[in-house]
Length: 117
Image (cartoon, rainbow, N blue to C red):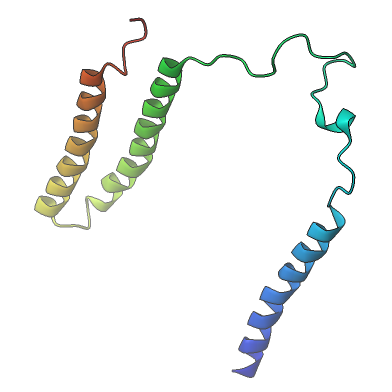
């Protein structure tokens, strides 16, 4: 039992010591103006570094990511099909899909899927 406590202590203390040493060694002492300014081939930047971003593109990307994660969550349901209760499996799968379709319908009605206004 003592060996287990010792190994837990060592496995927590060594990474903490390494992180503290790395944090202390990586501190920048001087904030140089040249190092904190944007680099553009050695010249001063002619325009702002921030470009305008389309909110519609962002919304469609977020909806795509939601449905991408949905596929990752639905795939194991097919594997569980053989070993679980068929009624419970069907009800839980339909509930999951209905919640996602309800969210899609809400986004559609709010106009988040319309690219051009």
